[in-house]
Amino acid sequence: MPLKSYGVLRGRAVAKVREGGTDSPHYQVHMVADGTDHRIAVNVLSQLAPSELLYLAVEDFRHPLLDALPDVDGWTPLPSGPGGASLDFVRGNMFAPTDMRELPPDLTGPDNDLSDRLDHFVERAIGDPEALLYAFGERWGPERGKRDKVFGFEPGNGVHDIHMNQGNSGRFAGDNGVWQDGGLLIHFTRSSSWVAIFLAFQSQAWHTDDVTGHPITDPGRQIEGDGRVRIVGALVNPVGPAPEAEIVTLLNTTPAAIDLTGWTFLDRRQNRCPTPTGSLAAGATIACTLTPPVALGNSGGTLTLLDPGELKVDGIAYTGADIRGEGWTVVF
Image (cartoon, rainbow, N blue to C red; front, side, top):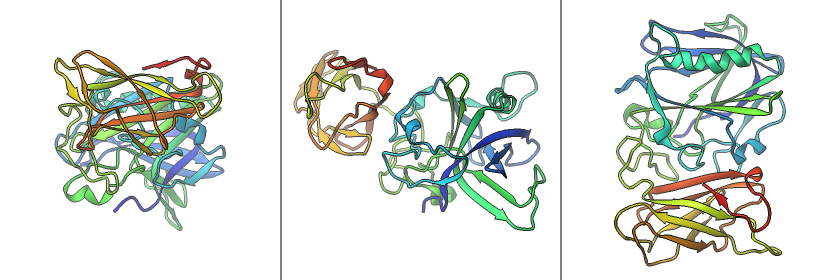
């Protein structure tokens, strides 16, 4: 079953602790949100082999979900569905899984482990009184009459599962769900810049069921076939009054022709429409006119390409700032 209490906590980071010497160490962050103390428990080691976590920090992060984030401090429950602020690493097109890197939890020496990389951004947030931290995951507390085991405040409150929460097998399969992934977003308001931190376990699969979040392929980021057809451009705002004919350009990156029959587009709200049918030659492109109900919003959106087996082949995201004006194609 999915997480019981999924959402996002917005507040200020005021302290951090690097745990070590346990079988399940965490990187602990003390957050204050709307006058209440919280502990953010970030996994830095997997209990399943391979033990090293997958990590990615995206500096200057841009994505349409930023416009849907809560504008007040505190905990905000989020519905596990598309179109809002909920995270889904697979369906939200937030990053390419192949960009993630394995990192050990804690090693001697500078800038060589996961805790060091988290330090780099969290310490910046602690040192900036105007920086806002958004922690996505599952909430616990308040634990009345109980002090927090790391920072000592009372009552205990916090957020955990700050990582991908789908594609699990075995004893962690009960945590699977869609649109409920964890993560950290940091808004450095003085520079109007965002940093996004994403974590996943190497034991998790990246093709998952659209309802349960259970794996439908074996674990691994580099699944054969991913990226064989790429979304390379989108005419999001054509010249003329609405409704306009939005056009997406696909590129066959492989050395062989690919039959597009049965392929599908999904927009940010997971509406569907088919691609053109027929063969796409090696190295060739094709201009595809999107049909309702699929639509690309002028203020931002996503588009995902699925093959006939419902496996994700490619996906893009864009914001309103990427659109230069009527008739301009956004290039990915």
